Length: 317
Image (cartoon, rainbow, N blue to C red; front, side, top):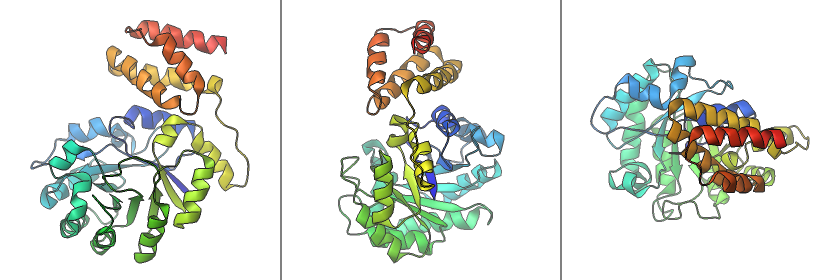
């Protein structure tokens, strides 16, 4: 059984990865995408998006972090993959799943699912360029507007030499609207010989059990479900061992919120306030106390005042 923290642009940044993997239960993580156009990016770009490269490619919680690249130019993607590998990336992941309109308009992400031949060229160019010891994986959706080319894309990724395929069980047009079509992951898994990771709409332990049963995959990638419930990974880990895990209660979560806020504050004061409010907006799905706390700090703009509110909330609990 493997549990992977999904790449989520603007949400699973290095600080969020750091905190969530230290809460525990996550085996691996993937960076937000590194956008590649027609240039070899400087080392500082990779180190900014993946500071874990300075620590052997792992988070403080010990989870290896794959560097994800997004783009449509095979040669430039290959050159940037080589740079990421030279900087210590444990693995390279290629993004064929991002549904963002801006990204798609610039021939990145899920729009490439209509071009399986280009997907093959990209994966092969990267696989041929990076050292053999560095795995190359890819993440795809079921298609752009429909599923008509899902098998073509999966076969293109496999035949190009990828070591792993993650399938987000929705099309680009479906975005993140439920349901996710887990039975499609099973169909693709049966059609290829490389390992497949199941992804999409996992919010609870029961969802994790269901996606594994329906997809047949041992490895599951979870995104917003882990951000909304940082204790979910630990509960899944317990369930995998046949034990009923305890949910992470709000009092136990508050110190992690303080830690997260302090790390964000070290980057920028205003940024820290916005990021904490963003996370509270996600947490309220599983923790109603998050909505209550957000109401308390909604009008606050100064980081010092928010830090005081966090400390007071922890003392009260």
